[in-house]
Length: 222
Image (cartoon, rainbow, N blue to C red):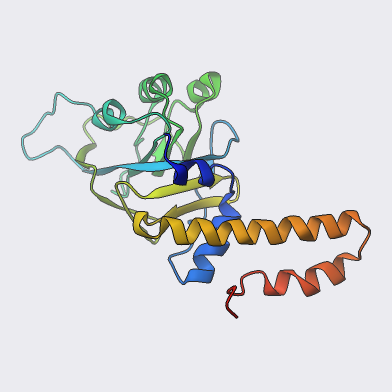
């Protein structure tokens, strides 16, 4: 992905983005989506998939869930899957990880469980989720929609939004607020670097955090 927003986002972590969302009064980051394969920060533009219980209305579908998203994904995209059916089975698996990896997808985030985690580890493909299971989706759930609106944690995510995920959490950025959020996050990251430099200069951490941390989210206009 070559756009400037994605390039700037790649230099920020989930905490800086979450703090920025907090400062701007936007929905906060999602907690509990874990890096299940490799511990690598991922970021990029979101491509969404929503899964639903049982079979589709037309019965058996010749297309496996999430394959349309992989085929449509641009390099650097992050596939985000909603699997909130309440059915204990995987919303993502090993063949999908291999296909997405070959296509240059940054990673996958599943609101639910995924499987073939060791396979994702072996190829170095980042997979985030609520946990792992060996239970197949076959006959249990189906793909209801690709490229629509999904619910991840308590955040509504749209196709084309932005996301950054790391070991601290997953932060989604509405596409129409991306410039505001990333600019604020860059200011926050700059303040944090200054605090670290002060620590390196042997200033007491109580002074550094007392003077800096408590005002970290203050608006530049305040």
